[in-house]
Amino acid sequence: MSNDLAQMAPMPVHRNTDEPLWRKLWNAYEPVITGLRRIPLVTDVEISGGMYGITVQLTDGSYLWISSVEELPIDPAEVEGWHVRRAHEDNPTVDEMVYNSTEDGEHSQNGNNVVPLVQAIAAFVADRCLAPKLIDLMSVQLDGVTKDHRRISKLVQGPFDDHHAAVKEYGYATHELMQRGWRCIHEQGGTDWPLTIWELNGEIVTVYLAHVGQVSA
Image (cartoon, rainbow, N blue to C red; front, side):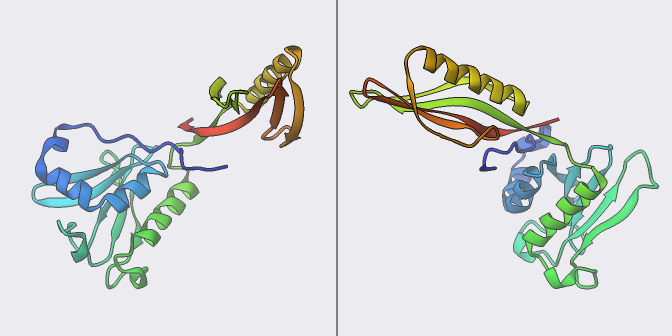
């Protein structure tokens, strides 16, 4: 099943988002930010006292600070590797290196490459259970065509965050078609991702269970 509809972490909401410099940095580091928001981690650009960095909120109240040799430059092309530390505003004992691809860092071979940076953060938060848990959403869908070649497409029921409930609703939907005289001409997917094709008087419809996205648990 496609994961293209996976939930992204929300945009930050604060007064800086209207500032041209904040927007410039947000757009400049969009590949990093989008990669982290897809984990999904709430990600922001920090502008404080002339210091620029990317902050990433974690579920235990700590955060990641992403910089370079010093602060992040306005131009990402000038990044000399990534430096990522975990910290906590209320607990100074939380202080650990997560990733360092600057010249003298453990991951210096990766330089300013964004992909290993995001992969390292994803692995770190998964290992520590510091990212929001995601639940798959499913719905019962119907698509088809009438005998005069008009398209039929509708959401039957959903979305559901429980697979068993979604399959049960799929069963109700197909039973109703059968009661109305529709004939099943194809079936696949078993009870995991069921799909059936139905025919009645020249009309054809497909009823199926579809993955429609994810939400945080």
